[in-house]
Amino acid sequence: MEREPFPEPIFVTCPIIPDLDKYRRRLDKIWTGKWFTNNGKQHQLLEERLKKYLDVPQISLFNNGTIALMTACRCLGLSGEVITTPFTFAATPHALTWNNITPVFCDIEPTTYTIDADKLESSITSDTTAILPVHIFGTPCNIQKIQKIADNYGLKIIYDAAHAFGTKVGNKGIGNFGDITMFSFHATKQFHTAEGGALTFGDPSLKEKIDLLKNFGIKNEEEVIIAGINGKMNELQAALGMEVIKYLDADRTQRKQLYDTYIQKLKNISGLVLPEVKKNVYNNYQYFVIHVEREKFGISRDEVHENLKKFNVFTRKYFSPLCSEYEYYRRLPSASKANLPMANKIVDEVLCMPLYGTLFVQDIEKICEIVTGFQK
Ligand SMILES: *Cc1c(COP(=O)(O)O)cnc(C)c1O
Image 1 (spheres, helix red, strand yellow):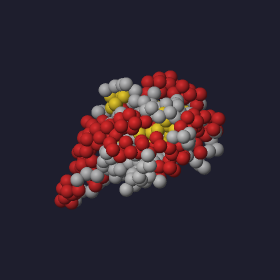
Image 2: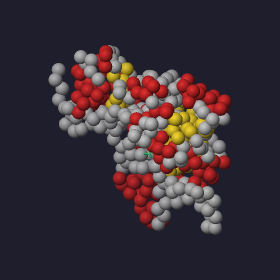
Image 3: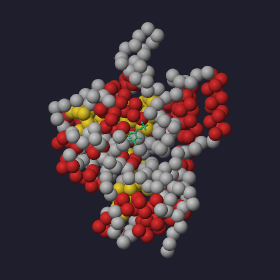
Image 4: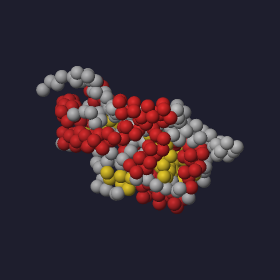
C-alpha cells in the first residue's frame, strides 16, 4: 500500500508548551518583585518541587546542563583522566576538557548503549580520578557494577542523566547514584526550562560548595573564597519550569502509549531490534530508538533515515559522529576504533524515532507502516 507523506513535518521531539497565561501570571510576580535572578522566589519554588519530583536529598539548579557538569567536576576536584563513553552528546567530554581533564573513552554495551562496565577496569590508569557514565536515552547504566569498581579504585562517579529525568531504578530516583548526577533542562529534553539544568547529590556538605561554585565563589559581601563560575538559573527559566512540570505526568502517560504502539507494530519485523526495558526500571519514555540490522532488514539505518524524509518524518542519528571521532578527540589513544568496536558498530545502526506527548497513536501506526514498507 502506498502511503501519503504527513501534511506537516514530524520531528524527533517537540517541547512541552505550557499555558502562556499561567506563565504570564508568574512573570507578573517577577515584574512586581523586581527580582530576576540570584535565588529568587521562582528558583526556590522549583528547587523544592524538583527535589520532591526526582526524590533526591539535595539539588542545585543551573543555567544549563553543561555548566552544571563542569561545576560537578570542579566540585569533586577531578583532574588527570576521567573515563567516559564516546556514545553521547558533545557536552559530556567537553565538560571534562574545560576542566583540563583528559576524557578516556570506554566502549559501550550492545543492548543498552551505556558504558560497558566489564571494560571499565582496563581503562583505569594511575591518572584516573573518576568515571562519567551517561544514562543514554534514559536507560540506566550498570549502576551496581560501576559503584563497585569506583569503590575498589577510589574513584568518584558523576552520572550524566540529561536523558533520564524521571527514570527510576527499583523505587529510587535516578539522581540518587554515584557522587553527583547532572540533569539537563534544555528545550529538547522531557522536562525543560528552555535552557537549564541541575545537579543532585546525597552528601549535604556539597550543597554549599556547589551553590558557591555556581555564583563566582562569592560567600558574602566581603569574601570571594573560590574561583567559581556563573551557573545560576534565572527567574524566567525557573517560572517556566514551574509551569512545564504540571504537564509532565500526562506527557509521560501519552509517551508510554506511543512507545507501546511502536513496540507492538515493530516487534515482529525481522532486522529491527527494539529497546528492552528492564523489569526494575521505571522508564521515562524520553526516546524510542530502533536498531536497524541491515543484513536482515534489507536496507541500512541511513537509508531508513533518508527514506523517511520523503514522508515528512525527520528522525535523528543520535549520537553520530561518536565523540571519539571529533577532530578534537580522535588522536587520543582511547579514541581508536580498535578500542571501541561496539560503539563504532552501534553508531551506524541506531535511529531515534519521533516521540513526544502531542503525537497520536495513529501517527505512530502510520510511521511504523511506512518503515515496515521499506523492508526488502
Ligand atoms: C543535552 C545534553 C547535555 C547538555 O545539556 P545542556 O543543558 O544542553 O547544556 C549533556 N549530556 C547529554 C547526554 C545531553 O543530551
